[in-house]
Image 1 (cartoon, rainbow, N blue to C red):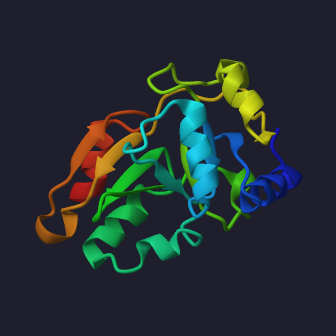
Image 2 (image 1 turned 90 degrees about the vertical axis):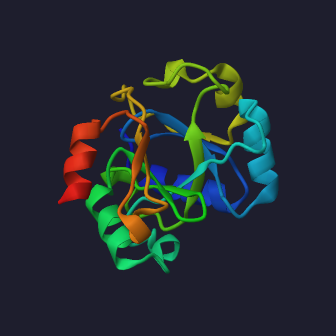
Length: 187
């Protein structure tokens, strides 16, 4: 299983411009530093992902996500704090996507990770490391094996207008059912 040494190697790898294949609370992901243009280009090229398709930024605790939450209105911030951490990707104003998985093994990490699922663009969701395409595993600088994962993608919730009119939308139902999202956001 993933331990403190793996988390330290993960953070060191992305700080040095590397790409990591890693387990999340849903599927295997692949990521790099969001601040490293060369690593971002390499990540998109490895996946065959169109450059104009945005990727979310993953943080491993709400405290680490604080810079991304600054400037949110109180209603939106409270909604984010009720949804995260967990298997949810939240779209904030400005079309910024953030994700804070429920993962004790990486909670010590403070660096954000530009992340996407560890599949080729449009490919099957990887629940085991063996499901991650070989070209992604061999193209990454670090590969972490977290065993078999749930295999259901995160639920994507658009909160970009939540502050102004309390409207929200589930763009992709995944690990968290629509009914649960609705209950959380209407409370």
